[in-house]
Length: 388
Image (cartoon, rainbow, N blue to C red; front, side):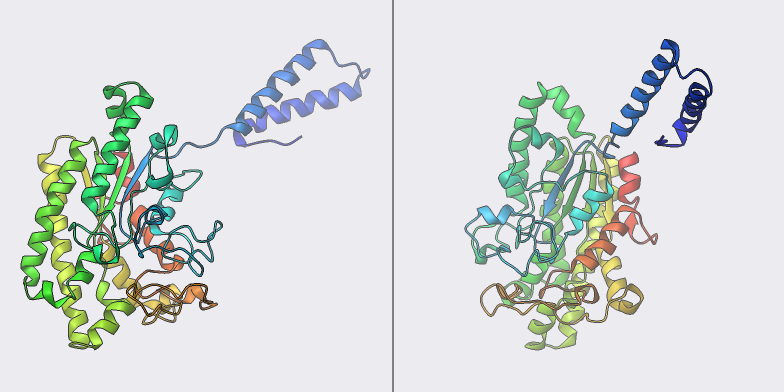
């Protein structure tokens, strides 16, 4: 007889005693013994069917190509991961994810206990919306014009509009406003924007228009209003992902070589740090001034900088070039379609010229969920946030 867990061991032992007694006696099973056997067997069967619930009832994801899982497939833009080698290590193959396997949002989803990945907004309808959707759109940013040179993409303002549409549908599914508000208030929301806005800063038209401080202030002013809009839509548990050290990406390094060399990389990373400091300040302000707000900041810069500076510690050997061959067109960071990528993908930090490999996403997602260092999250990591 199989004992399902420690909680049922005593019941299993008790049944085994009955079983032995039956053979020792006349071999006739009494009605009472049979009844007990059926009762406990049904109990054990019920336990075996119980599945753990996810730590939050729903998860909504906002962001760019670091989390996009198929939304740009439905948009008339070249900023989409249509073919291999994208998805080469993902069970479903190419899905729109700009990496070889899971995105960082996929990793967080699994750590939260969901039995499947959060689906893209573009293809999700009906009751599935209640569980959450991913609004991420590759090439998009805080600014409405960011990434539009690739064709129409959904910046954060558009993603918020899409979320408003989702909320109206959730209200219809759950029955009324109060039920929807209660449900949405328990959800986790992650927002990761700004990387593409800072890559756009490599464009001399923008860098001549703003100093690094002015650009950070301009972005924060718009970002603050966008995050307040999300709060007004019922979001209470919100993790804001900072911008990573985009200057270390193969794309930025190659672009900087044509300009100021390594100085350009340093300046770009300093700009993102200016922005991140202001995002951290927003979190403190929201938590202090918005009723029931539980915002937190996830320090992508610190985590990825740690990997970049200590690659061998994490098992990486190649940090300055991409795993795949780059396409030589207006989508300069993308992989050449249908080309074979590097075989030792777990040893590369970048899959293409901008996006991390699944190996990096695994490390990052785990540290978002449970901070390894006090610098990883402020004031709490995702695990702490969902407990609040």
